[in-house]
Length: 325
Image (cartoon, rainbow, N blue to C red; front, side, top):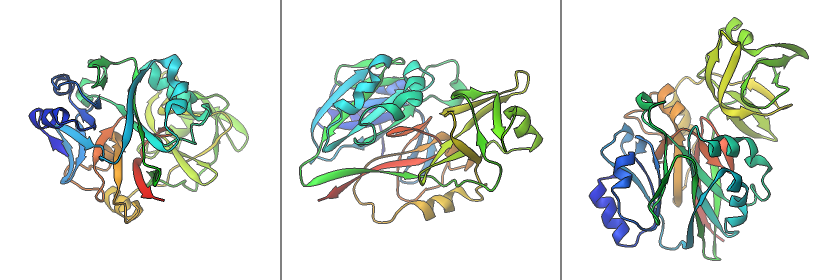
């Protein structure tokens, strides 16, 4: 829910554990307490998509969650996150966009030990799009007051033995019927690709086919569809840039177009999710789907520069749900 600084401060002083998203100045004005936060002015509220720098989006951790630990991570410490995450619990992780920790986590997280054995969910913090390049995204450790554009912040939480957490991913994109695309290098930008066994410039391929860059590349990992969203095409340098890394040897296809984002989300979000502890959606879905003022099911949360469900994701909605054993 979106609340004023005063209302959020009351919750902190009352001892509530909170996951917060909002304008940097608002977050800096809060008292110390059991909370973590990231910067962003875009949200999916109870009434639909909204952009505001006057309120903070608050996710209040349920009282049955215990044993919370908040920790900051530098780039070289990121691999410790799964080890620090509680086996019968979950971790909420916030990483500042465009930082070394963002790049490193995106590239290396799939190889971290226990990364898929722990319930690690979160988001990439951002800024107002008009401030890109002028202001850096931040994260805040509410316990210490430390604010950083170079570190990640995580809240590790423990659940009672009669409960457990699962992560859900809502990806409204499917692979289209076009060419299979393979890259021989990995990272956030590429020059060449292989299509039908032949090497060609990926920038030229996209331009020649008049590709709509609103539709991401989609890889099928044993039935799990993972998007790689397009950031830009550099025609001068014949380079294609992404919001997440592509991986060497993985087969990608361009996504099939989406006609109506709201309808697709409503169809794709599972029913009966009555214990969602945290959720977020992607800024690209917000922009391309024109979600301001529109609802995507009953799921609320920050609109982010990237989603974390174990690894970094793009153009998805992710959520953490709690179950009884």
